[in-house]
Length: 145
Image (tube, rainbow, N blue to C red; front, side, top):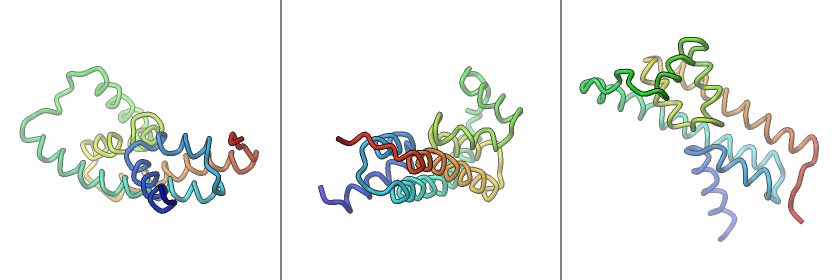
């Protein structure tokens, strides 16, 4: 596989499952840490835009069927997080715990201001990228033999 295809795959994967892309790049990448950080951040930010607008469309569509009644324990946890910490709380856990698509769709179902959702989600993606890859760069962590 050539390098362009590999980078494109990591980029797209990070938009859907952030840690599935960040983890292997943190462990085995031979590129500079900041280049991998840009790949993962860029993919995550693209995922935020796509899934925020897709989530808004889906929540409007499903609202007509009244499917967002709180029946499930996991959804109740997200409502508790949203009520306690707001969109910032959902955005903070989205890349690492619940995935970017799920976080954006949940945020879009609670908040109609897409720029607010995008702002918080992008800040969260950049924060996690800086934290994870910055630590790798500062401490010169490599697990390649």
